[in-house]
Length: 323
Image (tube, rainbow, N blue to C red; front, side):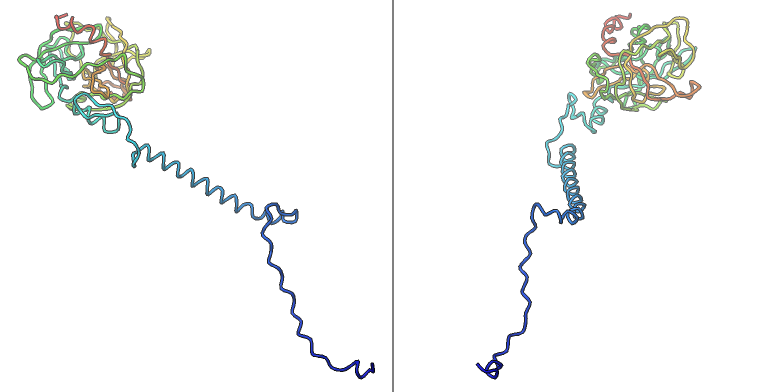
């Protein structure tokens, strides 16, 4: 073949086009060692996502717990009714207890030639029997009772028990009073909710609430007999845990085991009932731990004491018999 034939023209070649790269493969679940740096760079993002998921789960759990606690479509909490009322051991229970017991609470004004006192009491029979503290009426020559509706009546002392600082008085001619139900102080537990009724500072119909702080507290008070004089809480000395309050004790004293409560008690509460959430009387308010240097300024610091109602029931027949 001649050179002329060898160099003859051929059809031109198409222009060069680079090869199209193949699609990138899916990430290997177990990447090669060279990818460690990239994996480390991505890890905080994954961690934040995980934290967000956990937070969402915790938030959902909290919402579920709140729904179970406050209702929101969940089953309602158990309630414990007061006999004859709709009271319950929830936040509205105190209101129902107050409505049930208030008609049985009275203010007591006692006076004699040597002094006067204002206290409280609780009606325990339709025909006018009222329990109060002995120191409120001891030696009184005149006793006036003020009922929850503002009505008043004269009362007489039926019987006293100075060793327990308890007294029973009676309103003559009564026949339609509303008696409170006496409960069981032995079954009361520390931490149980209670409501205190009385007339502190002469403010009739005052109600406070709290819990039973302790049981079996030894409280020492004067043993005041018929020769004594009425005492209100400002001038009623007592001893507790080695300390004395509201002045010096007299030569004769008596000690009883009391229920301690943090329900606020103030001067004038003595003789009023301490009531459980079933509307039953579990104690008679009797002594106050004051917070001031002078008795006239004494007020509640969350340490009040009540005579257990079980002890009162043991002497009730003696009080009715004039003991």
